[in-house]
Image (spheres, rainbow, N blue to C red):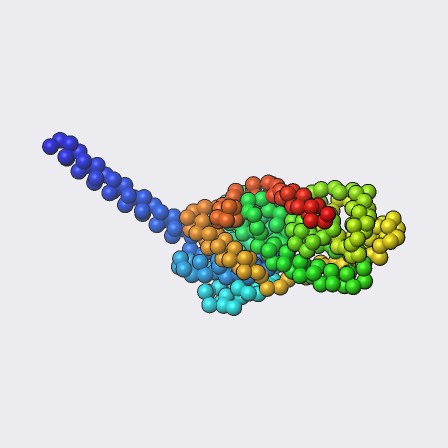
Length: 355
Ligand code: F6P
């Protein structure tokens, strides 16, 4: 009898407890009523798909959504617009960013950040989603420390140089754009028996160069993470000439370690290997434009939803990314400070392919 009434008591307590937990989580969910989204730093294909995802996830969870134009500069200047689910129709396939992007010097000052905070308060915005690279996340972390303002980052840069995600938004599209361009360069290189140096983007990271180099069948790949050395470059080019190759492609990352820019490299090779007729092609900003690949659109949609859900759940200072093909959160500071290492196995594969 005693044990029966004890079990009954336990049941009542646990029911009351779960009601309490439910009320607590509803309270936490209700704390976030209005979420702002911005794009910052270098643009990347897939940013529009991410904006769309944030706006639609807000609509789904009945939260208001505000778009901030021109990144942190627009935040300082109060360049805001309310976005409903229908305002982001027909943008999933568009390159660039409808919210525009900027690099704000003013946000680096205390006064600038104060203005930004006052604007957010005035518009009753409770949380911010920042789509950008490590520079944009650094601004977010400082702002959060000063004002305890909830922030979630979505990695958007073609360089793929962010820790905590295998892919950043725009990287896959940029790879495809660059490979397509190099395929075309190969046609003319082969018609004229020429050696082409093709420079791809990646100020500090060789992800684009390495993958595009393997994908487009380059003779050599020069990246910031590995110093091939000029002698080895000459040796390798000589070897391919002797192997009977009449034309060649060398893919050079913007930030490669030879100490020479791509034009100086071309001159150096022409002076030392007169048997080669050398040309240079710099792909440049075309790699940042164009319609996002399906991969980037899907990634953007997944990351946008997760960013909104984390904020509603009371989380902050995180970056959403893709690890083991699962959407996972990483501490925002760790995402900035950590090193996303390149896959060196690809260098070995490239070597074998150029036998
Ligand atoms: O988006 C990243 C990146 O493409 C780098 O690889 C490049 O060095 C840089 O942006 C150039 O950006 P901007 O011309 O906008 O200064």
